[in-house]
Amino acid sequence: MDTTLQGVRGPAGSGDVRIWPCGRARTVLEFDWPCGLALLPFDTAALRRCLLRTYAVVAAGEEDVAGAVDRGLSSLFDGV
Image (cartoon, rainbow, N blue to C red; front, top):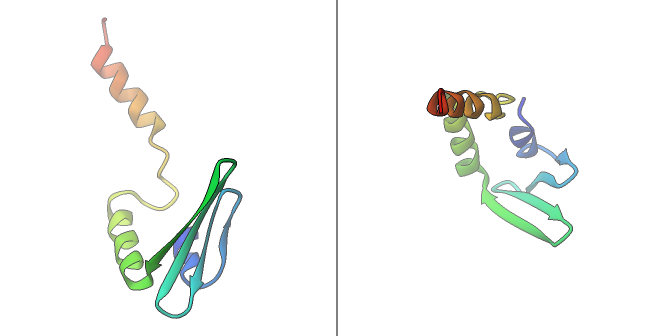
């Protein structure tokens, strides 16, 4: 299961990005980096719907698009 979907049920994530439920209707995403901290509250139901729609396009765990970008650039600049 994706970390974000895990985070709507209980604390999840590590490092710079963490997620946890905040009551029954909210989920909080935390972004922590050297220059600051951001806490973003989301309506849990809306976040879950958004995630499920994105997973229909890009499966969880398949978010790394570096290979597709490299192939696209190679195709675009082939022979240049």
